[in-house]
Image (cartoon, rainbow, N blue to C red; front, side, top):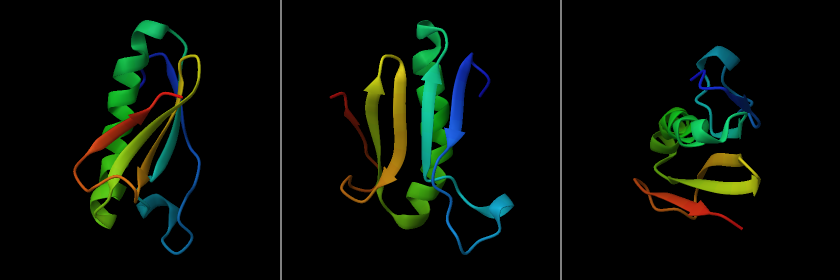
Length: 86
């Protein structure tokens, strides 16, 4: 997950010890544009654990040039990944 990208957790759950929490949301910033797809794939793999736990899908939202939010989202059916490139 060190593909020249900056990935940070943005919304931890409150009731589980931090070391045991599945990550439900990540912000991805690719320092090198060619590494963006790899960074997104890594982020989806991490968020997939929380999505599976809650039986919801994953939403990828573009928030800027080579910047994305990857999150488990209830509007996406379980098992699917949707992209919003607004």
